[in-house]
Length: 260
Image 1 (tube, rainbow, N blue to C red):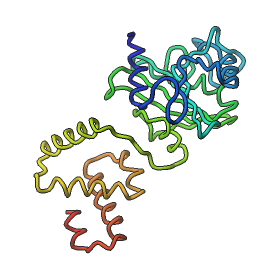
Image 2: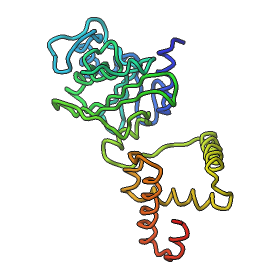
Image 3: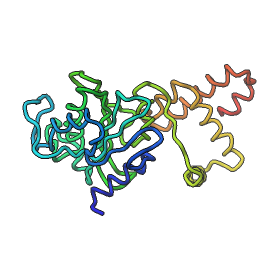
Image 4: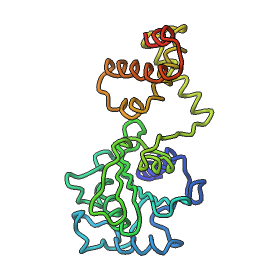
């Protein structure tokens, strides 16, 4: 397996998807979409990624066949698709002006998206690197027939399951499916981390419960990832807990115990 194929496999694994038919729809590899005439025609128009092409330039299509790593379709939303481009190195993630489609994953995925958006709402995902904790991921949303795209910053440097990309563009809360093994791994990691920061066994359940309660506060769940310090996170967790429990008929003494 080549290094770039490893990135492709890792991407598919993180998406909890496989080639071919899935519960949500279909994953097509390397632009092999012969069953969908509309997508095939758009990829033919795009052609293979050129070395240089401004995003605003539609006068030239690349030579050869368009081969995005994956095209993903949805059974319940036939107007929206995902296109994925991968590179084996984070140094190949993007150029300054996104105008080198062949050399960079962001440039490449936006190159394909600018053609696909003629007929679809396009979620464009660029993945670079071979290590899960060090890879770079950029995700963009290009609405059908619009002149430009927006970056989905909540999906920066993470790979979502396909249905969660749909939830994201609709502004809904993301949901993640966990296997028993993944839950076990997460529990062990959390246990070890809490031990490192000297949270006692007696306080661990309250600490974890407090976090879960805070995540039920919509403002906190949307903004916690952008908080820049431990102090800010703790302040916002306390506020979120108070907001949630105050509306749940919990005694103030119990709320204060959990917060402190």
